[in-house]
Amino acid sequence: MEILKVDHLCKTYGSGESRVEALKNASFTLQKGEFAAVVGESGSGKSTLLNCIGGLDTPTAGRVWVDGSDLFSMDDEKRTVFRRRNIGFVFQNFQLIPELSVEQNILFPMLLDHRRPPKGAADEILEVLGLTERRRHLPGQLSGGQQQRAAIGRALMMHPTLILADEPTGNLDSKNSQDVMELLIRASRIFSQTILMITHNNNLTAQTDRVLRVADGILTDLGGQTDEKLS
Image (cartoon, rainbow, N blue to C red; front, top):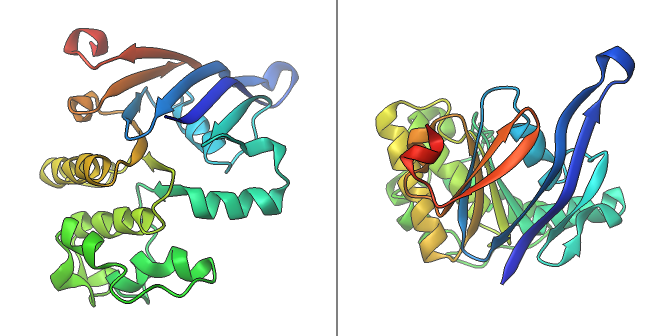
C-alpha cells in the first residue's frame, strides 16, 4: 500500500545570482510500514525535502501525496489539520513542552486536535518506549535519550500515516543514538509505521529498509542499504 508519493519536487530560493536550487525534481514512493533514511551532507537539500513532504515548506514545483491526499492542493487551514492528524514529527531538539509531564507531552497532539484521550491511551506507547516509570516526570528531569523517546511517543500518539524524523539522534551520544534507532525500528514493526528519517550519519542506516541520498539537491534512491553504496 503506497503511503507517500513524491513527484518531481523542486524548491528554489532567491533569484538571479543568489538563486539556489535546493531540490531538483525529487521523486520516490514509500509503502506502508517502510522505514527509509535520507542521507546527505549539511546543505545538500535533505532538510528541505523533509519540510516540503511535511507541509512545513511549499515546493516551487512538484506534488506530494500522503495516503492518496494531495498535500498542496489543500488550503493552508486544511493542510494544517491534515498534517496534525496524519504526519508525526520527531525533531533533533525534541521540542517537548517543559511544563508538561512525559505522559502529557505524548497526549498533547490529541488534545491539540480537540479530542479527549481515552483512558490509558498512552500506556502501550509508554511501555514500548520504556518510559512507564517516567510518565509523570517533566522533560527537564529526563536524559537526552529519554526526552527523544518521549518525542517519538508524541509522534506515535495519533497513529499517523507517516512519521518524519529530522536528525533524531543529532543531539545524542552514540549509545543513546543506537537506542533511539532501535525504538524507531520497533515502532515501524509493531505499529506498521511508515517512517522517513534524515541523517548525516551513514552508520544509522544499517537496519533501515531503504536509503535515499541527496547531494546538491538531487535525490538518488540507493535501495537496500549496503556499505559499498554509502561509501
